[in-house]
Length: 169
Image (cartoon, rainbow, N blue to C red; front, side):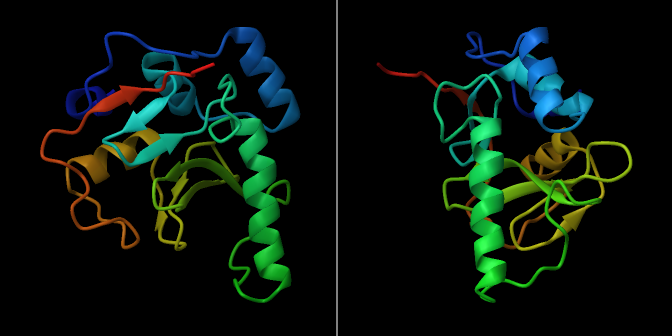
């Protein structure tokens, strides 16, 4: 995986989904991209370079749980569309080719897949479209070959890192 060359995997990981959790999640949503599943198996729940969080169906934190956030993020986006404060450029999941959220930034930008064809197309929050997989998107943002207009100019750091999330009781 190209991403591992740019973003070293952590020594300790948290909340890697089991096969049963993947099956349950995909039964409730749709087939998920293989690179997304591999990412969570390798990195678990955590923060990419202090800015990007990838939703995880195994996360105990509802703000990072894929199933919780799919409902929240799509509901919020649908409400903005209904109030006409946001344009409906793409349909929302579960519509055909609908947007399905997979991550969020510390600035509140939501990252989406467009659910059509082979799972894996990545989306950024201002409908800047990238026809690449999630991990290719992250790698290209971290190595500077892709720029997301909504991301801060000081992101990423020169030596990107991944910090595992620790759920506190």
